[in-house]
Image 1 (tube, rainbow, N blue to C red):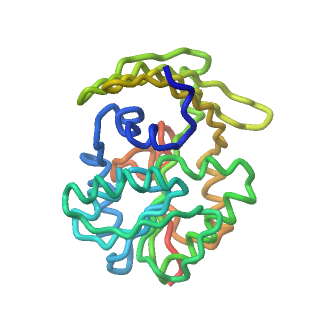
Image 2 (cartoon, helix red, strand yellow):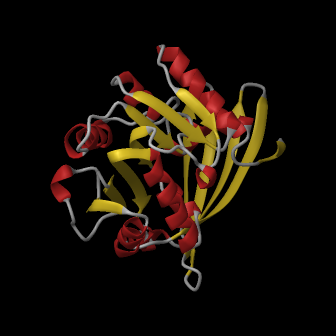
Image 3 (tube, rainbow, N blue to C red):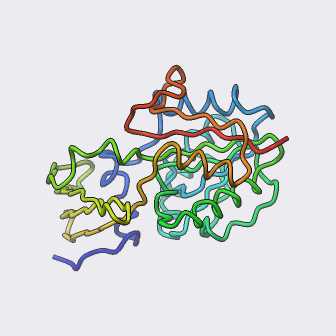
Amino acid sequence: MAQLASPYNEDVARVYDLLVYGEPRAQAGGHELAFLRWALEQVCVRPVEDVLDVGCGTGYHLAPLARAGYRVTGLDCSAHMLRQCRRKLDAEGLEAELLDGNMEELEAEGRYDAVLCMNSILCYLVEAEGVVDVLRRLGRALRPGGLLVADNCNFFAQWRRLEEDYGEVREAEGVRIDYHDRHWYEDFASIYHVEIEAAVREPGRRWRFHSDEGLRAMTVGELRAYLREAGFEQVESFPSFDVNLKDETSGERMIFLAARAT
């Protein structure tokens, strides 16, 4: 068996959708896509044409938005993930601009009507100053009245998973992944760890994957304060992709809609 793979190299990018979402070529749909379309078409005060997806990965959100007719740009710090995203887009004849870069260095003054910041990527910024700095950068990337959609996991709702091992087999199109994860929490630093071990079997090849990601656990109140400090207005929060649950106080997600000043 090959050595452990590093996130997010070519091997991991190739099986990422199956590893993370449980299906190959996974894309947002259902309530999640409906929520995004509602936010872009009914909440944003300006017409939305240009959308930036920060941390786009393999195009989970990018592809369905491109299919819906938006001019989409994907930003990711992994060239391997971007190549996989391009393959997904090309398979459907979809257009998108893909940028190899880091959100902590984003400079895109007034280029977009909406910015997506999904899949808890803000939680990779373990210092409050880093969160606010990135939010300011995302705000500057918006045109006046533009909308930020930020989706974070509510780690404080995950206590039942702490120190428990979870495992399952994820299999599709000749690839089998024996998946295991464990969650643990550093209470002093407020860092939530997700440790993943996976054995991957592909035709003619076997390899292993290990990842221990430390993610900053933040409350709804903290993120609201950071968004305000970064200059956003009209901050609204949801505990799931349900437009009827605005400002509910309990849920496994923290989804924020925040506007740049007009």
